[in-house]
Image (tube, rainbow, N blue to C red; front, side, top):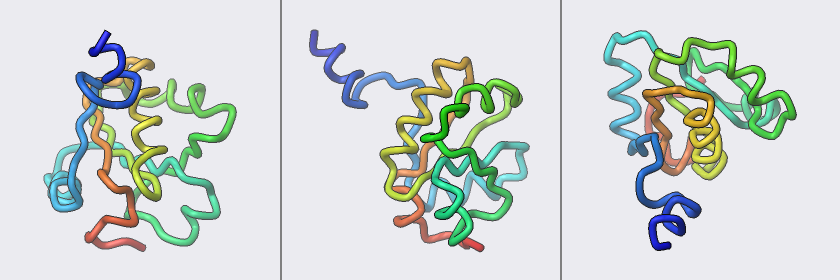
Length: 116
């Protein structure tokens, strides 16, 4: 019962890793091929984003369909504005079969790295 509650609210085994701003930035610079996924609205994305991020709005009805077409083996680095949409997107990525999933803890509002 306790494990069910932890998984329901994001605790316990989730299938993805939460990274601090410094960890997220270091991972983006490691030279490994990856997908950087911004799950905010197009309006938010236009205002500020991490370089080379792909915008797929988690609130769009085709979110799952759009993500099903990408390489499931490539690491995915996810962010939103404050972290909660990012966690929700990570859970969906786990369900879609992605393996290496990382969420920016606190979202872009807590990110100290370079944005464009």
